Image 1: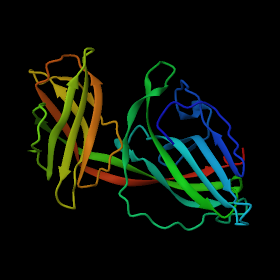
Image 2 (image 1 turned 60 degrees about the horizontal axis):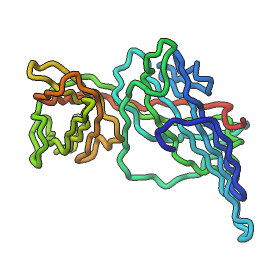
Image 3 (image 1 turned 90 degrees about the horizontal axis):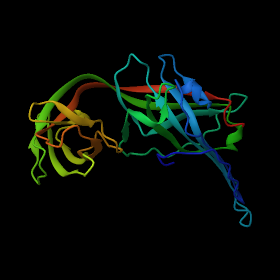
Amino acid sequence: MPRSNRSFGLLIASLCGVIFFSVETTHAEDLESLKVPVFRDRDGYGLAVTEYSLETDAELLRGESAEHSLKFSALLQPPDDEDVLCFASTMVAKYANDEDGKDMLRPKRRRNNQQKFYALLPSLQYKTGRGTPMVLCESELEEIVLKRSGSGVYELAVVATAILVKEREIEEVAPEVSRNYTDIGHGTTVRVSSSEIDDKGEMTLKLAFKHVGNRDIPVIDSVFALNDRGKRIGGGRWTNELELFGRGYDVEMEFPLKDRDVEKLEIVLATEYDIEQIEFVIEDVFQQ
């Protein structure tokens, strides 16, 4: 399910029953104003279901049993009093109960892949009534296999992973493209892979990070361009999906500059943080 603008739609495919829903671009004060199902945990984290797909796949000529699956996309919103940097780009299903409370979820082989994350960012698509961007993060539940049709799921519990920042530290590096890595401490090195400023004064930046060690790995929070007076003239958080706890990753950014003369790059690292598991219980959605 791509990270893009979506409009309401319905699709039914032969021999493979697929139901597909999504939301239009909407201006709202809060998730509840988006007119989609919204669920919150006890701490105030919000999950808005923006799109879901129920699929039944049957090979009739071969006489094979039908396979049933479910997946959905969502917008995640942290409470105001939590310093959330990012959410995992995928959620994990805990159980999928029918109306009698019986779990319909089929066991799935556990993956060994590292989790990937999207940064919490002001949304270009969802805004408040005052026109200010809502701060959200997109995530999805990857396809889960069920014992029967997903329309029978009355209660689905999913777990989202968030990184809550406790402490940040700042380091500076030269803005020039280089093949060499610069040590910025905390077991982290970085190099500028590419850097370009277009005619409109918008900077496109790509940084390569490497980490050593297996414990207390810092994670990238944001990057800012500084002028010769040390003032921030552009920047923010990364926009691509990152495997934050891998040995290395590439950070991609694109942002306008107030001044074309970039003297330094300021790298903000989250050096202390908590990894939180937030459970949402989604009810009475998949019967629509």
